[in-house]
Length: 246
Image 1 (cartoon, rainbow, N blue to C red):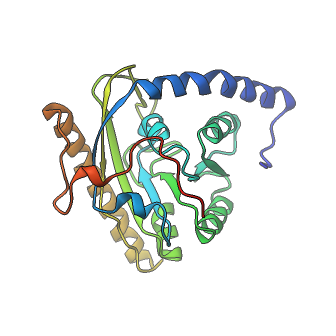
Image 2: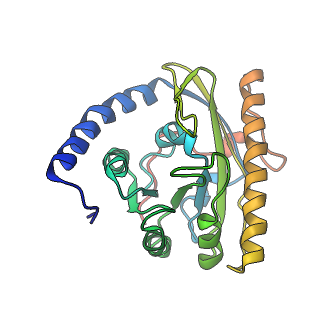
């Protein structure tokens, strides 16, 4: 249960938003087709110890929501009204939520994420959320990787046809029946929480996500799956596959 302090009217409004938006998002996701590239054993990464920390940009939440659904992944959502209705939506897609952000409740959310990883559940971070600056990775996910031994698993996705919202992160909304390219990077290990290590891996994460973005755009232009150097994209998990129980 969340201890976010909202009025009864706000909670009712959040429940209505989730009830209306969730089936629409689900319907949209069922129309999408996917091109996927990733490292060998990507499906196993989500199910073996230590579980990974998925890392991606805030503007690509919607596509990721559909692809990684029903795998018991825990996501940080803000401690405000927007975070409340977002948390209600993602729970309908098989995600858990940890309430907090870089501006409020962040330390408590990281503690919860650490507990979720210890319990064997993958977690996910929008690295530049919740307010930006866009495409600048905050250090929280990297610190958590160093504190727990869980690998960072970066990914990026692009839709062939989409709308871009006029928000700070230019949120991408795929159009119905479009193709999405998803590129998943190799796991990144963080050996400690020392400031130098965290900053080095934070920069590596940004560089990796830029490379993955270029790869997804190439995939869309060529209309083919682009394998990593180490493995073919066919080794990755299909969208909507339920995660095995632990």
